[in-house]
Structures are given as C-alpha cells and as structure tokens.
Image (cartoon, rainbow, N blue to C red; front, side, top):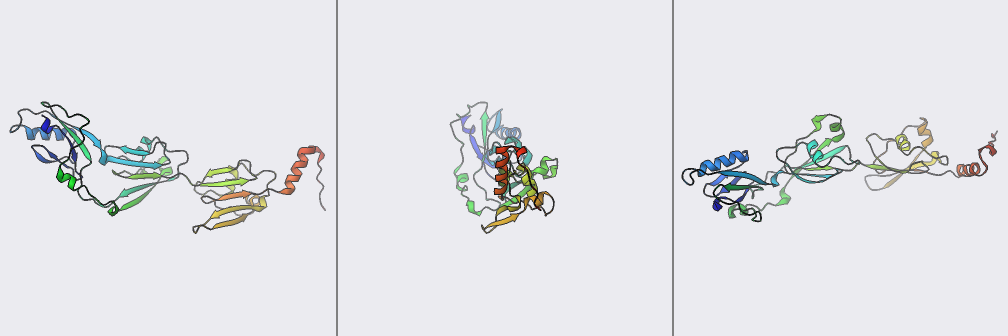
Length: 295
C-alpha cells in the first residue's frame, strides 16, 4: 500500500505524521509496539488485516561525539544511554598520550520543537517498499519549525577523571546523553634537553617533579654542569620565566625538589672543564690521567 509505506521523520517532541491516521506518538515505544499500534489503527475502517513493520532508518538524534586522544575519534550512533567507558571502547580505546581528564560538553538549553531527527520506515504487506533512493519525507508544517538559532544554545562542562575510571572507580563512569561531545585532550608534556642521556619530550603526570624529569631522561651525562641548569617556563601572561636550579643538589636531596608544569623546558648545560677532562680520558685512556688533589 504505497500511500502508507513511507519514510517519515520523527519530530523532537517524539511525534510523526502518519498517513490516514494523522499525528502519532513514537516517543517511548519500541518499533514492534509502534507497528502494532499502527496496525490496530488501520484495522477495521481502512484495512481488513494489515501487516505493519517499523524499522529505524536513522538514529540521528542518538549521536554521540568523541574527539581527542582516542584511536578512532568520530560520531557514533548508539541506541539508549551509553556510558563514557562504552563510548571510549567503541572509539577503539584511549591513545597512548591521553590525559588524566575527560571533558563532556553537554547542551543544557531546552530547544523548541523542530523537525524530527529519527526516521522510520513503514511497510505494508499489500504494498511495495519505496526505493532506498527515495529520501525521508516530512510535512510542510514540520519543516516550518526547523529553524533554530544555534547561538542561543547553552552548554555545561563536565569533568571525569579517566585514570580513576580505569583503576576500577566506576563512579566516574558518567552516563552520556544524545548530542554529548566527549573531548579527551592529549596529555601535557615537558621537555628535557642538553647534557642528559635521553633528551626529548615526556608526558606530564600529576605531581611530576624535577627529580623525576631527570630520571625519565635517564640521568645527566658526565659533561653536565648540573649546578647551572635552567627551567624555562611560560606564565599565564605569556612571559617566559628563567628559573635557575642546581640539579645535582636536588638529586642528592640537599635542596627541595621542584614541581614541573606543562610545557616546562629543563636545560642541562655543558661544563667546559668536564668536557676537557672527558677528551683527555678518551685520548689517553683512563689509566694515564692522574687526579692531583689541590691543597
């Protein structure tokens, strides 16, 4: 029955315009339950024994977004209310450089009724299904309500500690709502350069200190002037600070350890005297160099 076998959009209020029967409610009903309700409405006055099936064609109003430090960021269409852990799993899991926090951006402003986002397909046993190329159909009244000013929307920001979640604290496993945007930023980094064995960038974990930073860089070289090290740090105003540090004294516990912040650059300079001594050792061998104590 082609006149009732159509693709129809469901409005944001959960209703749709059914041929012959008029406006019906889909919100809160299963496809099977809705099909039975349509069949009951058509039975008797219109059809003798209608067979109706309802198929969900699109879940556009069930979109969940995830971006940032996951292996497969993108948009996922999910029925029901998935948890944060479920969405991360569907996105292929966390990337190696993920940060400890996840941010959930959620729209909180209630929108007026607009053109629906779900699409259902209705089929009758006495009619052929419309071709797939035939796009979703909507009435003029529904289309007239589709204009919504995006700038009026308001959002709230929720923070979830991913590390605690992965340690088994499932109280952090937030339930998501359709339209939620999950952002898992890459972890902050810091840099160690100069006379260290393994210079480079390192992921900044909560509570990282200068002693740990040097340990991650596998310690200082023989040529290092550890007493003249420097930490370059950008403050909130964008001004770069230069913080002199004595790495040797910190590593020996003679001076307080220093917290490392995001994007800090630890520079360990070269000692010319040690470089000269190292060259002698390499040139003549360790046994030919004798250290004479200075009185």
